[in-house]
Image (tube, rainbow, N blue to C red; front, side):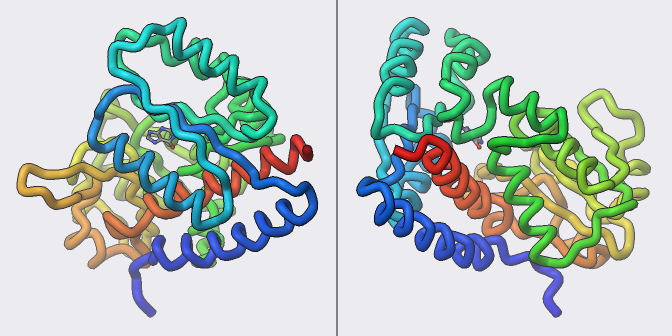
Length: 283
Ligand code: GUN
């Protein structure tokens, strides 16, 4: 059996299931679920993500409302758009593409989204529910990773999992989900001492730093499962992950490629989250 986790194939399979559920929603309520996506500025990577999200929404039967705002837009204008979308009946989910330009207050903007429309699961209410062990909307990347692990029959109970990266979007929610599945979880970050030894002791490695090849292949324990969230474009134009794939695959029992691993799953789980919030509103 291949050691490579095929995130693309798995995400397409899951998107078919979601498209079927979207059809049921449309038959029942006479309208499509709707997702509003706010993009501020011209960051090339964010533009690609947003475009891919829009295409995936359309294919699944979800209506996509795109708001592309100038880089120098004011905080008041973004907040006011969110207020409008919170009150809009056709908008079930709202997503603000991150990172935002430095002059904007990300925390305040995320807080402004109605938690029942928070398709990303970034609102403190939804993060808090996850922390308490009764999740509502879970952020798409960690949610997709949990589905990958399940589909590839990775046993988590009692395993040592290491997460490299402590972001609100990936590292922190990932830690909670793995803990809920009874793993022993270690979170590592820029101040961690002897990262190599810590990675070497892990049965499950989640790399989410955005620093290309920071995880050396030789650090991977024989038989470990490696999930690479990082995706960075090099000067030569190729996409690389946080993990030295060519060496890591010699040791891992399963590993995600970059691209074609975690990325497509994230978009799929966003579709699932949008349908979930739409079903929660039921109108
Ligand atoms: N930027 C990087 N990943 C994400 C994501 O999952 N959602 C949003 N909104 N922004 C991101």
